[in-house]
Image (cartoon, rainbow, N blue to C red):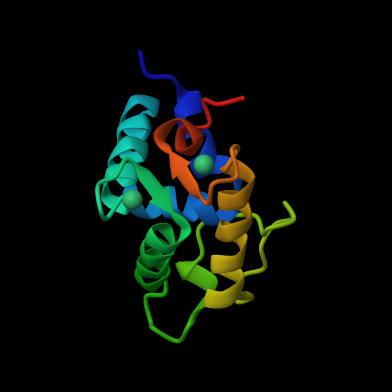
Amino acid sequence: MPSPTRFALLLRTGALACFAAAAAPAGATDAALVSVADDAFKAADFDGDGKVTWEEFRNRVVRVFGHLDANGDGRIAGQEHPPAVDGEGKPAQPGNVSAESFTGAVEEAFKASDKDGDGALSLAEWSGTTN
Ligand SMILES: [Ca+2]
Ligand SMILES: [Ca+2]
């Protein structure tokens, strides 16, 4: 049975919330968000080996950033910026999110979620269901 905790990774940082916001339809239910998390894992696992490496995930993150950066100036600003926090849990400043800081925040969350430290996320690690 799916649980909202499976979505924990995606909500752990504002950057990943951005990822979720970009992937999920507006008004999505918890069940739909869980589905998005699973779909996002499968989409990110480019070589289909059941693990998402940072290399694989970074490719997705770059695409999400490009999706959010509607005017293509390399920063997420103003109306482009969904509600989010920065890597330290403080509210992100609109106009102050570069591709570098966005990717960095996601990398921190990625490393924090990689419980066995093998440099890749299993579906359980991705979903936040490991201890
Ligand atoms: Ca893989
Ligand atoms: Ca791992």
